[in-house]
Length: 65
Image (tube, rainbow, N blue to C red; front, side):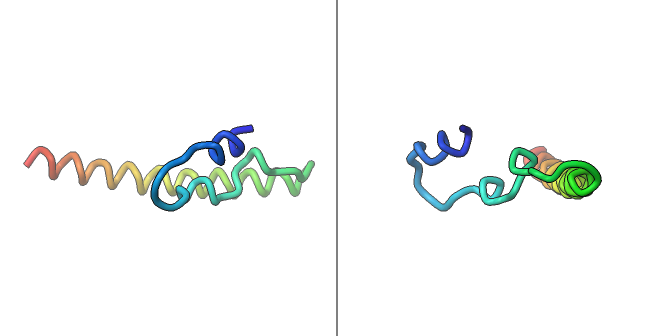
């Protein structure tokens, strides 16, 4: 449903990176295989969160100057 809403949205530029990623909503495997996929996705999201937090901190520091 969310992807359909995004397709209906008109905006300039290219598609956002997060829209191109396979997120948890697309995971079909059950059992142990599904758990591995979820853990891998969670690890990737944690790394992205750290990178974004670092970038935000740098930006805030620059704005304070």
